Image 1 (cartoon, helix red, strand yellow):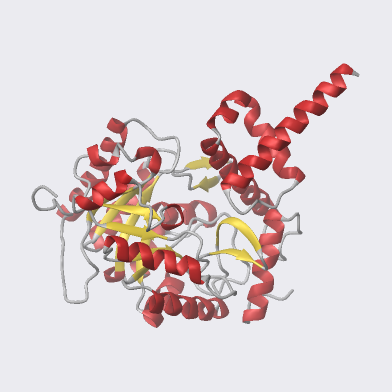
Image 2 (spheres, rainbow over the protein chains, first blue to last red; image 1 turned 180 degrees about the vertical axis):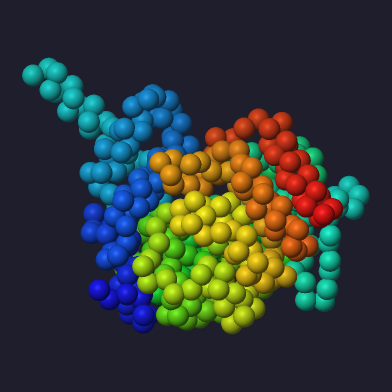
Amino acid sequence: MRHARTEDDLHARQLSLVKALVAGGASPAGVDPERIRVQALALVSKRSRSVARHRPQLAADLGADFWPAFQRYAAADPTPPANTSSDAKRFARYVRKSRHSLLCTVVR
Amino acid sequence: MTGPPEGLPGDADGPDAPPRLGMGIGWRPEIDLTVPRLPGIEWVEVVAENVDPDAVPASLAALYQRGLPVIPRGVALSLGGTEPLDDSRLARLAGLAERFGSPLVSEHVAFCRAGGLEAGHLLPVPRTRAALGVLTENIRAAQAALPVPLAVENIAALVSWPEDELSEAQFLTELVERTGVLLLLDVANLHAAQVNFGHDPIATLDALPLDRVGYVHVAGGVLRDGIWHDTHAHAVSQEILHILAALSERAALPGVMLERDDAYPSDAELAAEIATIRTVLHAARAH
């Protein structure tokens, strides 16, 4: 297990942590995977609050479904967009698509 | 400003002392009309990434016009990252400091991106000699680009690195000694370090160069499944106020501010939190 003893090691360790949190990577060696899970969830929760503030009407429409829907959306593509505005746009598109496929399922 | 600032107890100005600020609050667009109505607010902190120096919101410009110091705080400079600092982010911090004539600016002892991937959050650096080297270099680069002193903040972490060689206090002290940087001490984050990693906040306070504290953050959080989440969306709890009291007993604090970023309470509740913080500071200094 190589730890952050040099700057190169430090870069590799930092990259492994970010990948574990937002790109579905494995937990960095020696770091508690349960804490990684909690931190990743906290990141998604923070994003969801920013999106809710950015698109209050969408959040109000979804009501109690907002958080579960956001979690499904984030799980499908864990890498957060560059800013809240694009996150909100992508989430809105995800919600529209899932409503559409749900409707199709019901009709069928 | 109408009349002299009320100040905090035990103000002590020396030639090299950090500028005195008094009681402040984090300015946010959601509470921009509340902030001017809160009694005894002497300064505000703004999130650098959310305020354009060339398009300052009218409510914030009005506070500045009234004479309230405005302190820009960056949240995404990634001082602890191994990649070069982003010049545009540094220029934004410097531009805001110029725009407001700020006495200082602040950032975090953290990294938030690597290899082109954004974490969207402040992440802890391993407390190793290698990381100290990277932070020292980045802090010096930031200091060279900024027109005013820089303060760096201890973060609230959920994960820790097995390779940590130094305590948080040793790590921060090294940074102060190497770069002359000021500290933005977050007492809620000291509480987070206690709950999440078992680090005694009082031992940390006793090992830090408290005369280098530029200002202090106070914020609420929540305990979930044995882990402290620094939400800035809950009321400030007693444990955090106790750490603030212990800090205030040990040093004259140039400035203390409340951070609230979500689930905003009523104006009266915010005012009551500010009053409570002030009471804690006065009681601690009376000892």
